[in-house]
Image 1 (cartoon, one colour):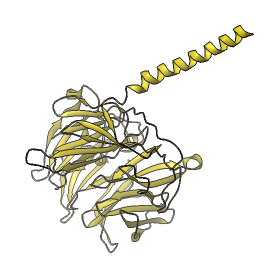
Image 2 (cartoon, rainbow, N blue to C red):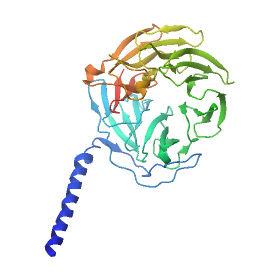
Image 3 (cartoon, rainbow, N blue to C red):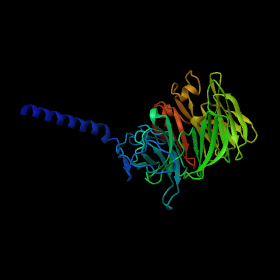
Image 4 (tube, helix red, strand yellow):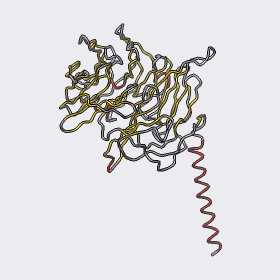
Length: 403
């Protein structure tokens, strides 16, 4: 009997030892080179709405699978090997003294843990600024100063509820709040949050301050399948894209008046410049992708020499250029549907489109420089137009490129 107990005890020790080896092999080295800021250690709520602060209900996962930043070349850095939440923000910090130089900071969220990280491009330091556990985030929309991310995630029975939560970058327990549940779309500026609620009877677009107060209705429409964003002093609304249906893009003024600026085009996707003067549109013609610029004041359209889906692009803050992930050899597919659904994947190069000269030039030959395949999404650029950031849809990794 004693020998039996001895064998059982030895077996338990072997299991514990094996578990420790697995932990250290897979996790202990994953956070090397990452500084950790203090956090509240709370986890994220599973549902809720209104402006109440969520209660804590657990401890944070202190490990990270994002890895350490790797300089692939002098200008290209792989910030995160592990998947990140699509949606990041790039900010510039002024020099604090005559001897110091300006610093560019990239703030993002790790998909696995929901922890918030910041990366200093000059110092090449990656820091975790929040260890709040936020499972299942699908996307993030940041305030331009990187203080708060409006994150969207699913909860409830069969994950049928869409929650939108304002998550402070520093993980402050008292700083977050919920917006209304089941929002169809959201856009963020430095002062306001634009939200879209859709149903069978149509859509209502509202404007809320960034602290969640003073929600006011902006406009309503019988269209029930829309996407919305800011377009300077106006708003951009366009029908959700489909290769089989003609889509239309509208500018909407503060009085709720619609004016058509693009379409009808099959597979139409629209991206307004920060000032609202220009609209970048993509659509399908037969089986081929097309892309053009629209002057929103005159209605003039300018075909572009490169083509991609407009969601794979980003405008510079001054409207001067657009950066896009452009596929080298697009596979035969139904665009943009197959790409959104993950049935089609691209191998992109990054192109820079000059608005004044109406020409495009290659900015980054990613397959050649990184010896990898890139399907670029969630592109972002800093206000000084010095750093381009993008997520590789193929594996969720985060990259930065010095312009």
